[in-house]
Image (cartoon, rainbow, N blue to C red; front, side, top):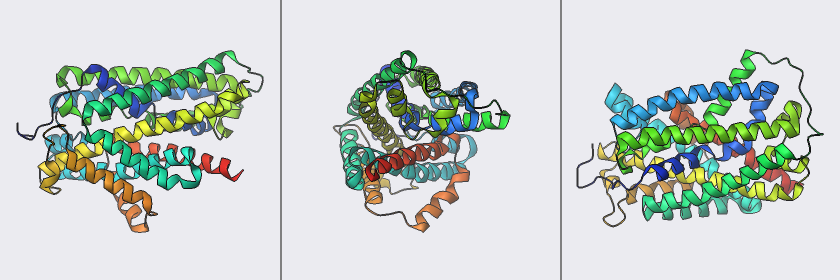
Length: 376
């Protein structure tokens, strides 16, 4: 537990907490996850989303209760330490840091791949540096940046839904109804991990005002909004592309607006994808830095990383270290050994930590699509 001298300041209210959760959930996944999910579930995509919603509700309830009981920085690391013991907390903490490092790297490259594909790594490093600088100046600045990003992304998604529901539907085709329970469950798994970022709110528990009341409410509100967004976007995509066309869409949401007869909005949708990835990256860096802070307090990492900035009230050394590691990770191709370490930790991660698998898949898919456009 943090002592009074090094505790973070509680500056986040209900609205800011909800927005940070939405920044994690309505991220790159909404722009990419529907394609593989539709490939697995076909016309039963909405049923798969309902199953994913039920799983997410159960997991979110657990996260909310743990966060209310232990309202400090660290999230999964703290819960493992307090409920299962120091050893399991240690594994959960390192699993979180290792997994989210890979996820942050993928998100940063997604930003670079869409913004300037020919120099994606330079843009990725610039994005990490800029977001780290924002986070360094205080969690309220991070919340403000997330508000702007989430508002822009939701505006883009509203355009997609509006065009999809009221545009042309003549290209929609339906797959033969041969999907079984396995395909539905596979799609549910993809969708669940795509919007399971609500636990990011819990990781910031030490910076939330009245956490025992605010965090559970924020998690449920953010989850409800995210589920509604995913459902509306899925309905629009199925209306325009159909269950046969959606699995083959390289850019599913850009394809929706183009096929519906408003191709001029496709670049706007791609800008939305960049912003969504940036929002996810911001929340990821916040979460990793708070976990590093918690582990440094327990001396699993250098104690100097537990320092809290006197003016900004943030773990500035942890945030700077996290930003530096991510920036260095983007200037070099990952070695086989680094990926081996991440793969070794993967089976030990909680559901929150394993979310990085879907985040990386979504980001990689978006990055590959940007590369294909450059090649063409």
